[in-house]
Image 1 (cartoon, rainbow, N blue to C red):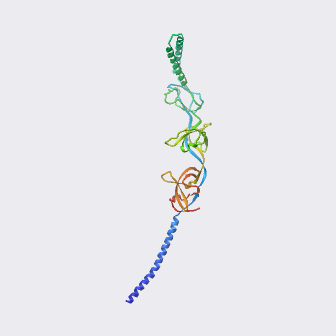
Image 2 (cartoon, helix red, strand yellow; image 1 turned 90 degrees about the vertical axis):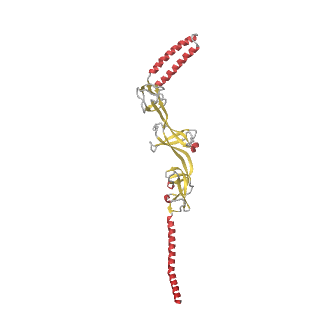
Image 3 (cartoon, one colour; image 1 turned 45 degrees about the horizontal axis):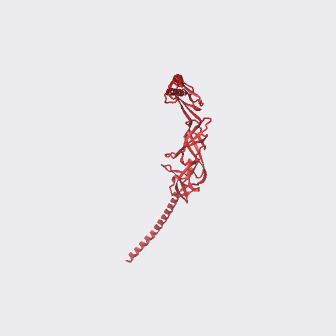
Length: 349
């Protein structure tokens, strides 16, 4: 019995001596594993570069698009259908106010003239009789009314027999040939005034108090790349469109050399003064997929926050920031696609 007890004790002692190294090895392995996890967690922090944003004076320049139109566009035609006897100008010709453009057939005019002259003779007879009491006042009035109607009709037809330009400008359309019958639908000529020319832009109601008649504006035309034309606000409409929350503004360009032509595409730049705003690099801006929202990652104490921002003007490689970040904030400019809101980062220089 004693021998068996000693054997059992020896077995237990041997087992314990063998287990101690195993336990120590497991503890060391666990310690190393924890250190590796901590190192891996440290390695998961994204390395980023940041830039501080600052408040600056920002010019409030706003661009609007418009199409150039003529200052005046006249559709010239006789009052009634008639045959065109002769056309005197061609498309592209410059004409002066009052210049003869077309002569219409005078057959009807000549017939009306003969009729009017006969009525004048008849009226003179009635008038002599009326003076001596030979006819009544009502007969005299009726004859006088007929003569007045004939005179007015003749005068109107005479004016329409010779078509003249009401303005100085350029002939931009001719729709008939010599001998054609004017049909009463399409004008014979279109004459447009190119000096000045005008543009209409719709401006947001938030700038209503900042736009005034006589205000200088810059105009750029795609056809004249790199060149800027000067214009002025000629008319500010007094009401605001409730649907679009905009109001129309008419701008005129002197165009003395007539290089600017109706139909050209224009970009109008208005300067509404300067304002103190935060300015940030365009590298810090993140566009939210599927929307027009913009964001920036702001870094504080080694952690980033995803801030929605409202952007103003783009100035080269920088943006005016209306809201979302403050003066002195550190915004992330690299590694943006690997960041999430609240993530820890390592700032590198």
